[in-house]
Image (cartoon, rainbow, N blue to C red; front, top):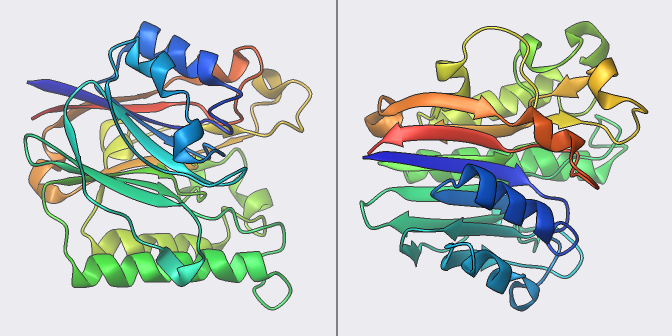
Length: 262
């Protein structure tokens, strides 16, 4: 049966609970994975989501920072979390559906502004986080799994508005792209979004700094949906809800959807 999953960096779930509710009401994915919730689990506005039929939630929270949550209309079992790179951050949570599919929800560190770990500790943390992901998935090869989230890297030339101008900008530097590719290879993950939409510019994030984000269209594809090879073939459609960037008081990210026949 068809199963639709969405991933969205909401940039404060309490501030934007209304936008999450709008998405759930209008688009009705079976599962919605949120990142950068910026709230402890007990402060998540879960009653708002339960009223819309999302009665299941697995989450890890942190006051004011980070935070990941998986909201679902379908029953979920908590599958744990891992403190990648030992940062002490709420950046990963996993849950397993009744059909045996495990969903990993990630919020990879942004990495600061300077792409040099000697000058910028945050950039080093980002690379270490990706290295830990690679090693963990290499040692614990995933099966029947989906990985989603704000991975904070736009890997392809057509995942950014200008490849040459962004080569020295954090999120598109060669070393970040290499680390992401190594992580993907370690888990044999398939980039579902690009499998479904193989050609053309594709973005999921537009900076708040742009006065007219839509006209300027200086975007990056930072949000991803991956799947293991044993279920990647069941994916048959993907889309990015660009219109959500124009909603009132929006996140700078928009939801990314994938539908599977599972």
